[in-house]
Amino acid sequence: MASANPYLNFAGNCMEAFDFYRSVFGGEYTTVSKFSDMPSDAATDVSHEASADGIMHISLPIGDSILMGSDVPPGMGTVIPGNTCYVCVNPDSPEDAKRVFDGLSEGGEVEMPFDQQFWGDYFGSFTDKYGIKWMVDAAAPEAEQPSG
Image (cartoon, rainbow, N blue to C red; front, side, top):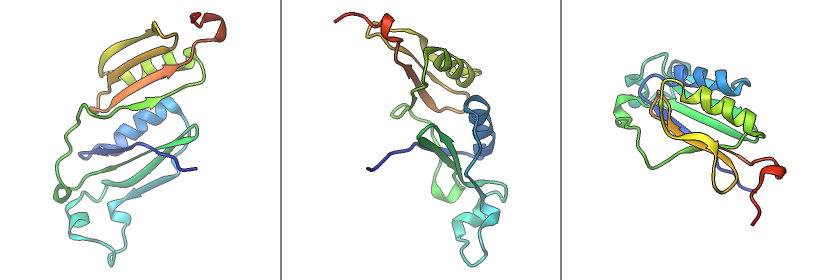
């Protein structure tokens, strides 16, 4: 079956952001490629514009998904964090969801505080300090589910 994974673009601080995400989620990177790692015969004008330490591609497994990202060289456009996309994570328990919410939202702007919602799940949303929008959602234990 096909799967979908979020891919985040940054304006030169991709490694810093992913180190922050890894500090919350744990795990190890499966890929960290810098623009300086590109072979000279594969380099493009765009890659020459990028900082040698810029991240060409990074992958961090989170459960069954992979959070991926890169820095965007100047020749490929301008990174403008928007409000049209969120990364939604679904930890296994409300306690772990609260830990993830508190960790990722540190230094950011909370949109909806993390709490049990009228539909029964524990949910919250925010924009992190890198301009990325997140939703954190965890099902309530069965005993706490509202009857319906």
